[in-house]
Each structure stands twice: as structure tokens, then as C-alpha cells.
Image (cartoon, rainbow, N blue to C red; front, top):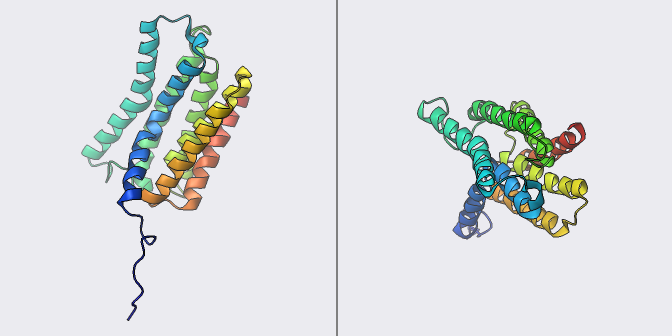
Length: 220
């Protein structure tokens, strides 16, 4: 008979899982493009001087609408129509259609940014949108082999984008980059705590997110 007591480290308690779930929701992959747009509005407001306050709010709403609401609503419909087993996309099969849907919306955002007047939107959004489009495409391919972490892809891409913003604008974003790196680490740790992701799946997501932003910066 094994009399070894179960320790608190055998399984994370509520004091870890509840904050981890909250963090995972706050930094959901679908919210990251909106956060990046807000970051640019806050850090480089002069990039939006050609827009009125109303137009800028509309642009922000459009980003959220196209990159968060519509993909999330599509996932909800897939679940209600029984095309996926769970709204949380716990299996690789469940993730295929959402990957394709999100990829379309990210491509559309890149297309709009590429064809919009230069003075209306920051140039950096072009490579950022292209980067998240490519990361979603590559994520779909990798998903055939492992259940790659979507959170890691999104946060790795966001962190790299902020670093690239610093290079593009020749701006001192040291504190911003440090905070973004900290958030990335906390979110990835949260995924270890409240999901069934392996280290390989999380680290692969980071590599995909980082590499695709770098490629987007070089290509665009």
C-alpha cells in the first residue's frame, strides 16, 4: 500500500488554475490584433493624425470585428451545428475549420492595409497582418502533426512585432518589449497549467509566431 501523501505540486490548485484561465481568456489569440492596434494608437499616435477621432474609433472597431468577433462567431456556429465537438477546440480536428476561417479574415486585413492610403494607417500594420496570416497558414499545416498552441503563436507574434516596431520607428521600446516578453511567458505558463499542451506544442507555437513576423517584416 502506498502511503505517500498527495502533495500540492501534484496538481495545480485553484489558486493557480483560476488565474491561469483568466489570463488565457484575456490574452486569447483572437484579441491580439486588437491589442496591437491599441498599442500603436497609444505609442505612435502621430501615425493616425490623418484620421478624425470618429474614424479612428471605427478603424479600431473594424479590427476587433474582423479579427475577433467574426472568427469567434464562426467557431460558435461550427460547434452549434455539430461540426466540432467543443467550442474550446480541444482536438486537432476541431481546429481545422477555425484555422481556415481565421486565415481568411487575417488575409483580408492584410489586403485592406496594403491597399489603403499610406497616410491613413501605419506601414507596420502591413507586415503585422501579413505575419499573422502566414502564421495561421503555417499553424494549419503543423496542426496535422501536433496540436500547436494558438496562444503561443499569437503571443510570440505580438512580442516579435513590438520588437520590429522599435527597429522600424527607431524608438526606445525597451520597457514595452520587457512587458510583452513577461506577458508572453505568463500566458505560455498558463497554457501549461490549464490545457493539455506539451512543451513541444507550446514552444513550436512560439517559433511559428516569431518566425512568421520576421518573414512578414522582410517580405513586406
